[in-house]
Length: 136
Image (cartoon, rainbow, N blue to C red):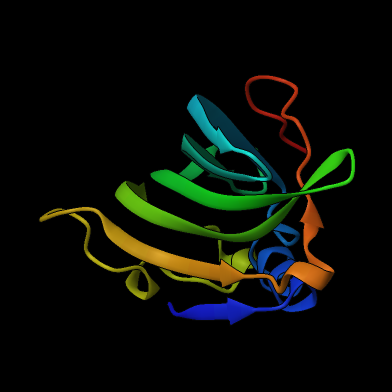
């Protein structure tokens, strides 16, 4: 799916897929942060569920997220991250404007779905997760 550069484009891309969906849940586990001075690399497992209008799971996928951060004062800024699809099943709800055919076949090995690069001057703040699955 390519490389996206810039915080505004990252937000636009994520909103385009997530906002039309009636309900989502993202379960995050196995988060590891390797901090070296003012830089950090993070990794986490994310399983996402996208529901249809009846709030019935229609599409599920599991990914490995990797990111790089830099310390900026008393906070951390995300400078890049990637999502590698491990497995997926089901069909995206029609509201997403994405079809399962748009996703790569991940049966042979994990695939890189997306890489985002955010120039350090406009990095986005890293926000701590509040635990398993937020959902809307």
